[in-house]
Length: 525
Image 1 (cartoon, rainbow, N blue to C red):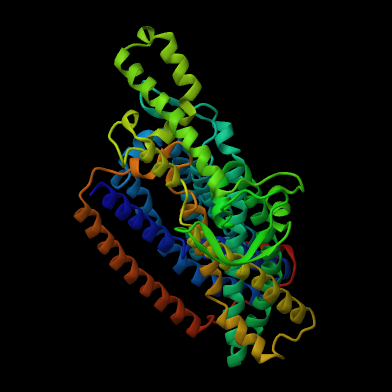
Image 2: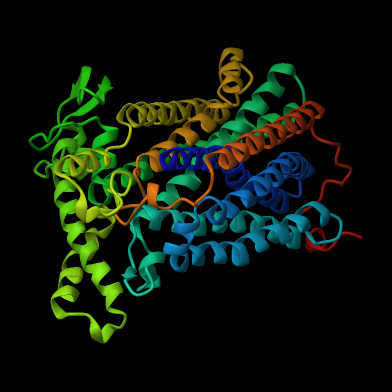
């Protein structure tokens, strides 16, 4: 029953996270595009850019509201479904989430109101400042959330206190500057920029095909193609940086993504295609490209990337060392006071304490890890391998779509430069059909990041199975059904509102064309 609770709790969080992440990328990207469009309006005084900002702003607002509604629920789940996790790491994990709420979310929410209701009450520069504040607030919100998530992937700047049985902050600056968090942030926001660019490109292409709102559509396509090409290229570069950091901090995730069962001589080959078989521990019909994985993963010709079997052997050793740490921890807690702890016990914990989490991997098999058999240790060691086929294919779908976005935005960038955006209807149709693809790529990326961390909720520190609340399986199942129904209704509402707004098109803007004079920047009467 305990394993069922773990699986159901993971499923519930996965559903809510994936639903929430349907709205996040578009919010991140559209906020920047709105700021760019309004900047052009303020610089040129041409009302078409104001009309563009208002139209895409309406779609941004619909998406923003749904993103907030689904995001709030996720934070409550930490206390509801993952209470031991909250107790164990709340001192560290809670800090960036609190900062996100106070510094980013309120900043964003405040200026969203000014964006929608301040057109005729603020000066042009004042309203532009509010729009840029919305964009900055949106991205700051992502920053703090990804600092928290990055710490789960690479728990730096923290230490375990055996007296309180909690992880505590040792160096908050290290938490903030965690290289994994920084790489995830820039990669995630760049993916959001691509999502918004493809969305604007697709909707605008549909208008061109229908012969509607051509002035707005062509200008929007030009902005989206330029912005999207830069963002698509940055996603690939920053994704490579994330992969490089995985070589150092999450070796098992990288080996699983590549279905690299055995360690190869450097530089390792890249498996472009194949069918990973987790039971047989091999990859059938593998198509391999020599040297590429070694160059991408290590940026050298001599560094070896360990395979899955070698990493499992290493996990066995760490589990045995973790058992020593677990034994020392029980003696420390039994001592009652710091002065009563024997020196040899203290030394044993200090030497092996970093592997305590590996001993907790035995909890699903035995109540006391010190009583684990060799077979249970072996099984727990193999539990450190995530689902290889899932990671293998989701990663390749994500990468394939990433290169497609580069090609698509480059083509439309070229067409916009030559003023030929309406010359090739087939390309316009491709842009329309490509509109949902960035969401597929983003969800695949999130699956790779989170699914690849299993069985850890905190890499190397706390197993997922040890982090759940003591709830009944039926209770969790009912909440899954409830959340799924509510989120599906919200999604249908959002899609209906978005499609209705797109179908209606931009509202006429009665503001006169302005010249670039000081009076043009004054507050509206």
